[in-house]
Length: 353
Picture 1 (cartoon, one colour):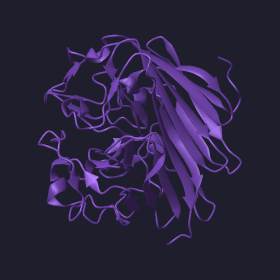
Picture 2 (cartoon, helix red, strand yellow):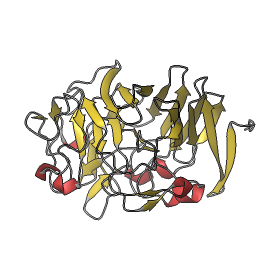
Picture 3 (cartoon, helix red, strand yellow):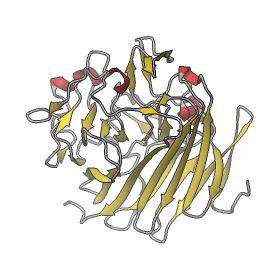
Picture 4 (cartoon, one colour):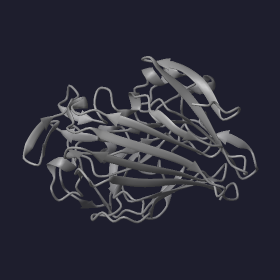
């Protein structure tokens, strides 16, 4: 692939494959950096209400750091995001044992998921990059050869559009998500509890002691999961319902029946900088995670990321869907392509509002 000045950094070699970091730009001075290791977002530089530009996603400086990462920092997660109880799935009358954690559930694609793969870069321009990965039949226990393509497009409206496509040659399951940790005050700013969040969700998925959905779909009313009206992330973060996850680590339902159109899933405001993030998605849920297991992680530019130093809004299908037939299906059939779109839109308001 031709390396373009100011657009591409050669990051090194991982398991005999070349790894690059790509820099997308727009006329507003916004920059998004992405590496083909894990199709990971490594940096998002956006201005605040006073025109000061800062990096608003947590991350690392080097390929080695991403290879050793345990937090899915900025990465594309697959084949199946989040948890599947027991790790056994039945598809078209056949049972498949997926790789599992010691606790007995499949998590985020397995021991070596898509976040640890080198993706093949198909194209790169000043504001877009497209990558592909072929997941072989049997990888982490999943059936079928799965071809996955992801494209990132940074628009002049400060929209980062992430389009996903996949196809398979055997019936399989798929649930992809992107996993950036945001801190709209800047990646070194620390605790995100003062960010103000609104989520277009009136139901959530209760979980058991392993943080796997029970199958219930419950109203958010009178729970800490009620973000229908904007409130600070920290307002109920110490509620006893959140104790098992040490903070928010829960799936909020955007819709119970999957549709194909984009809708607004969530809006976040950071009152000091004035930065605002709006998340659009075609997915039926968003998993809200407040970085509860960041424990003095050594990040980029000398940063140390502590507990709740960033938040994730992971657009996806419901966790554990293969065990709950009333959840939107995650089965992908040959000849039926998988598509998913998520948009991160960045704006500013008057600082302090």
